[in-house]
Length: 355
Image 1 (cartoon, rainbow, N blue to C red):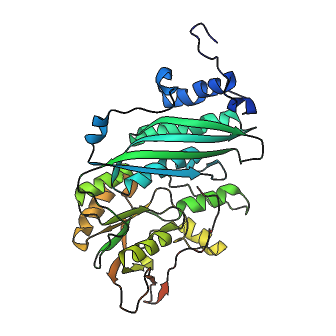
Image 2 (image 1 turned 90 degrees about the horizontal axis):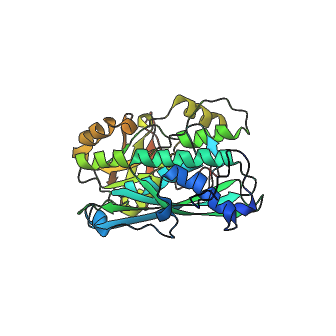
Image 3 (image 1 turned 90 degrees about the vertical axis):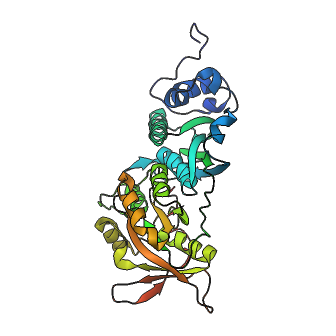
């Protein structure tokens, strides 16, 4: 300890050991030097077993709370455009944001494998802190556990988020109506393609970065411009295809999307063609699907394109009445020649361990 009674640091190098999970001085040094340094809390407050908030803070933001949790096991831990830390922060923020909530605070639990490089952990925690600050959200509480070498691939993270919902907000995957339009905020499949290239298994040299981003600023801009947004969902595992089949089933409509309207980077399209993948099913970590009334489509596009994360926003399809003989969950892709193919819910992962 130093003169003030604070546990001395663990240094910049080295690796995680089982002692870092043992509840003693090594664990306290890890918390002080890695997590508290990055997240910037008063140690006297941060070492409590819970975060505490004045209720007035939440009451000022809306009339309901939104609450979500998610776990992240991506491999590799770091990839072009992000890392497991940015995924954890952005993914949880986005799960709140697409429901119409304004994210307020996150918790983060870390499963650390014996042997993980401390330098890697520092980079990931620093990226989490930077991402949260940029999104206007605080990481306020958390936990660490250490498992023996080989019990996990370096690092797993679980994040939980809480936010506020403005009065009257009722955005739902079941909110789509016949005549509505479907909008995405940008190019599809970037995250899945980036992870595939980063793994190096196929000796691919395609330069694709993950689209990992916190979408709460974009969703607030969209809701301000179009108060009656019907539905929003971030297109992560299962991609846009998974979101649209859930939308069609929950809303009891048919969804028709047009192939030549889908915004896809040439690099991603080429990679999918080479490997027999479908970009509709590839994961995204900074893209959402929004459903708005047709009359509000121009306003929605303008609001989204005015935001850095929506500059490539595009209308990709429409919702129609489900025929009496139709099946729930009906999604059709119309190609350039007018032909149609059925888009189904993914049967499995095209690419495991993507988030």
